[in-house]
Length: 198
Figure 1 (cartoon, rainbow, N blue to C red):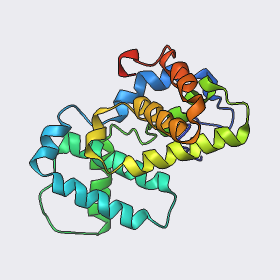
Figure 2: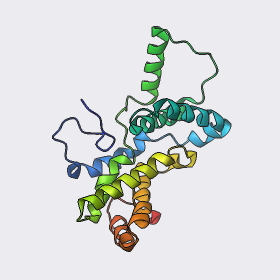
Figure 3: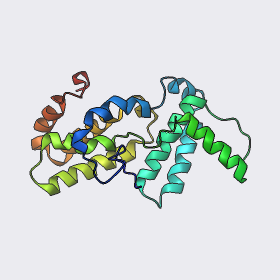
Figure 4: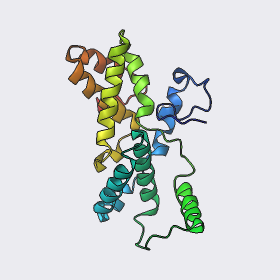
């Protein structure tokens, strides 16, 4: 079974994004670090910075979505278990299995993370761009903005939908400034969006 950052709840090829946007908005908070994350990271922000740097270095030859998920898992794990003590590195099968169970438990077995990428197509559909290349350019630029922003510790407190909407607004203003106000209005009028944020 394939996994897609855009369609995290899809179990089959019969998945249609139009049928579940409310589900994504309802569960997105379950895929974020806990509220005490700031206190944990303030203790040693350099640990997270080094861990994220290591993830990005290892994942540079792979699909960028893997690094995004890895950082999401890292932040969610740290927010529930804190920064681990330095016990050295042990890579035997039994230790790795224990760590897998510990990590999966900390993530509540939620590996199909709801991320900003899960909302991009939904928000673009509100704008209804007529030209497929315009839609693809907007999606590509917003995705690039989201990938570049994953290092920023301050984004952890924002819901994935808000990050997606913000990245799309920035991309639309950059790429299609004449259509920006129309796109902003379309997103602001969405019943799932907290209008205070716009």
